[in-house]
Length: 91
Image 1 (tube, rainbow, N blue to C red):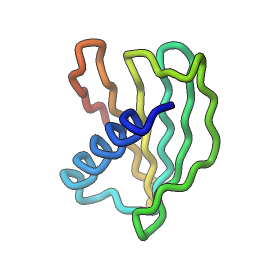
Image 2: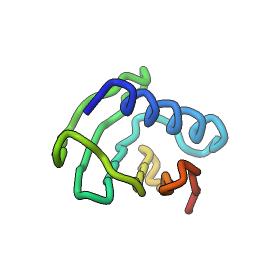
Image 3: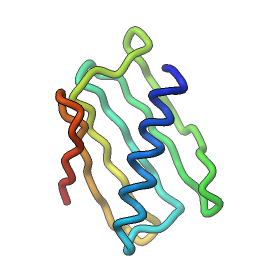
Image 4: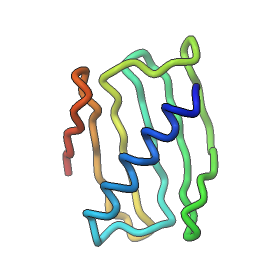
């Protein structure tokens, strides 16, 4: 998995959290690609990324990518990066 992909995910998550005032770190973020690749991370209160587990098929995530976030106060949100690159927010 390359650094550009990780930065893209971090940017999407940061933008979402900036808009959602009820979700605060620490968070657990589960990212699943269409090909079965999985990345589960935690974000602690200092906004540091902690890798919990990962499984990458051929070292790539294929679109669409589903992202589920759960905050410390049990608020959950779901994002989907569509095949065309658009980000859809589902709650």
